[in-house]
Length: 526
Image 1 (cartoon, rainbow, N blue to C red):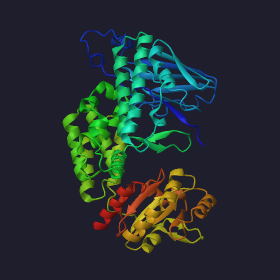
Image 2: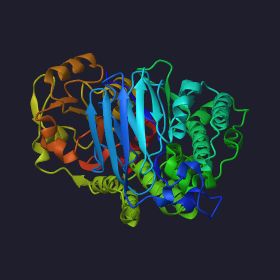
Image 3: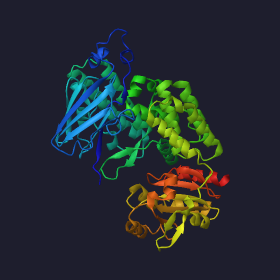
């Protein structure tokens, strides 16, 4: 089992100029958090030193914030580790950068925090007994979250239990205790920084809103009592509750109370809170727009795009459009000529406005995927060799020919992949239904290295896997078919239509049965 990681949240983003940060004055700021920033030269370093009582702590130390900075990828970050100590230099900072820190911690709730990286600053981190503490000029700001997480509850320990309004009542209580802790911290430490208070208070608000729009429903596999948020489950829960009790009308206004688009339109907050970024498209999709739109439909796509362009500008608009494109694509939008063209047109409209390479790479990958719509498999890929559990060898071309004019779903998986195994075990009835009612052939292809492990998995899950649908891919990820589809992560689903043309090069998981069946139905209609 991999060591669990703590993401020590740091405000994500780049703080803008002083005038943006201090809205209350046009004069030179006296905010303690920003003191001296007007005199920062064009480029300065931040030096971070650290010590720990566990030499494993710094082995995977990382600084990152959504593509802007990472000591694994950024040339402006250098890191030296010597057993129980670390020395990090972040170079070429021209303004405050507020970023995540990541270190492996055994007890995932015992040490969390957020820090400000300010040009010219020096920060010292001490980790003792799995607890982290920051020292330096800005320690009072940087240690807030370390203490905060020790004395407040996690929303993720209080899951939805069948009643959304009861779930909201618990979330309200947690949120009120969190804001009370902030109030007491400000008073106890006599903090005068309005910037610090404004950012933290907004971040707590958006964390609360996130837990309303994405209820805590998914049980963690390896941590007792911990649950995760589900970003697409809210309306399903509302429907189930109303089916169970038709006389009670669920009121979204009672549940959310009052949320406005202005809460997402503050650039300072947007740049410094991960929760605002997570919430933005979810609230557009499920709160601000008419819930009667069919999810991930053409009408919904156009409505979201129109709302974003009418209500947001510049960086916030670009981020919202990017997230919209990613979400719709991951849910299978782009399975018809109309939706493929709509996605490609939107990408072409915005792709040159993104300055960060990570965003550009994401859009380029989606464009490449869309360009394979109704694309024939290359002749050389059809020669890739497979072996079934009885040792019979055949080619990809022979396998496809054997499937005739049925829709084909290729499922790339491996015996060591928990999500792959979960879907193989849990999805049997749904897949059988599509096989018998929709003429869908499921083809399980494993590119793993260990043939014996693959054989053992086939025996273990023989209710789903058999000699007619499960195949070991010779040459694995080096095979022509793996390279053609760029199978770099699993589980991976590829859908071919009855004419053996690629409809979805990277299809959504069949775990979302309603969405997956709609994709199959649309392919069948065309």
